[in-house]
Amino acid sequence: MTAPLVQPIPDEPAATATVGTQQALLVADYHAGYEAGLRYEHGVDVPSRAPERRERLASLLERIRPDRLLVLGDLMHSIGDPGGAERGELEVLFESLPDDVAVTVVKGNHDGRIETWLTDGDGIDIDTDIDVVPGDGIALGDIGVCHGHTWPSQEVLESDVVCLGHEHPCVRLEDKIGGSRVERAWLRGRLDPAPFRDRLEYEDVTWLERADETPPRVVVIPAFNDLVGGTWINVPGQSFLSPFLPAGLADGEAYLLDGTRLGPYESV
Image (tube, rainbow, N blue to C red):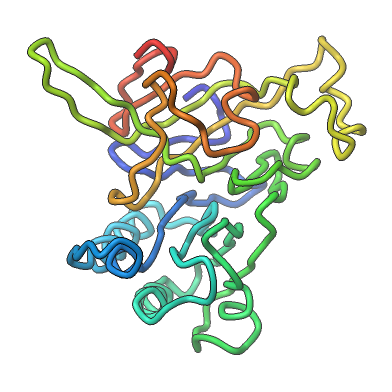
């Protein structure tokens, strides 16, 4: 990606970011307890992959050694209070984190009252420094982070790079003999001001009205959980999940996890 502050990690649904003098590891849509949700909501029995998810994240933390783990929403899967499966998964996850890594969780639409469990003293007993911030996001240095299920905060729009999850971008690829597969993808481009201009909460964001201003870059992070599916961004008629996508994305391009550039996402 060309955004200098955010760099994807090859073959991983994660990125590193420079936040002031710190380095952060960015992931989105972990969806702890997803398999239990499938059983409860759809009657589908899928063996838990919680250990694999945890080990993959632990491996990234060991390799990157960031100052902060930044989760861009949907750390857990249930909409309300965390259920037994995801509570157990997250307890083990947080207990396994390095002591010197702080955690910031941007609340996603699946994160319910996660702050009452992680930060208000009524949940797990861990030593990790955890912050839970609203889903419309915050600015961390020159980077704005939000989940993507709601309109971003003004400070996110004023950042140099806007990072979000929620969309679970995927591409459907076909071969010459009719076979097909779906792969997770990165989606990036620049922020198109059009859908933001008429919203009162953005009236003080000056670049929205000034053609000479350079809009922020946009990075949509693929889901960390490989079971959750997502938006087939290159299939006509697919509805995006975020209220400001795809209208808020200009010059959008897709990349596979291995870094392969697929070009404009609509024509892949």
